[in-house]
Amino acid sequence: MNLGGQPEGAAFDAETVLASIDRDIKRRAYQPGIHYHAFFDGAGGSGGDDACLAIGHTDQETKQAILDVLVNQGQKGKFDPIECVGRFAKILETYHVQNVTGDSYSGEILANEFQKRGIGYTKSQLTKHEIYASFEPRLNSGQVRLLNHAELESQLIGLVWKNNKIDHATGEHDDFSNAACGALMLCFNRFEGTIEAFESPHLRAVIDFFDGRDSNAPSGDGYRGTLSEAFDNKTGLFAPAHRRFDGKEVNHGRREQGSD
Image (cartoon, rainbow, N blue to C red; front, top):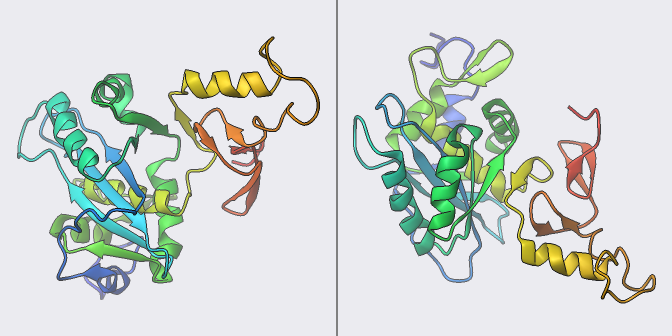
């Protein structure tokens, strides 16, 4: 251990993590008019790992990412992952969240369970390391506010560098920290161009109409291409054609070839 009580090779500074915690807040209530983002860290239900849901938003005045909710499946030991999706869907409904981003571990089964409950599911292609690496400078610059959550505090402070990647130490867990950091990075739009989504066929039909792929579409440069340039058919979002991702330019919401 180092002098700060952290494991050797600690990824985040303990004092910085502690300074970002709002000690008097364990959960922030829903506020109308706020757009919330959610991240899901799945688990198989064997009892070794927690399934965790985190919800956050961006403060429009301070531009900080604010963690509002961080919960697990609600019981210790073995659990039914499908039942925990039902629990999380109710929380998402309370915060008017219609889409959740999740890790690739969750697979199609849990994604479909969210969809059955009216919640869209977006699979993140960012690894835990990429989430944590993007989170660190935001943490260090005071751009995030956390909840008073014992497991989150412990897991963030316990993250280490292993094989050139940020991960939990051997024998430890990072379910809460992965969900929390994932939600907070969504608040900073750090996943632009790096996610897969279940595309809306209705939006696709509208785009095809105005882009001239529909035989009934109007002709002329005033219509053709105007929507496809703004629509990312992977994220299902309308956005500027050119973005930046970690200093690298992205076209139409996707990383350029060779950007990894």
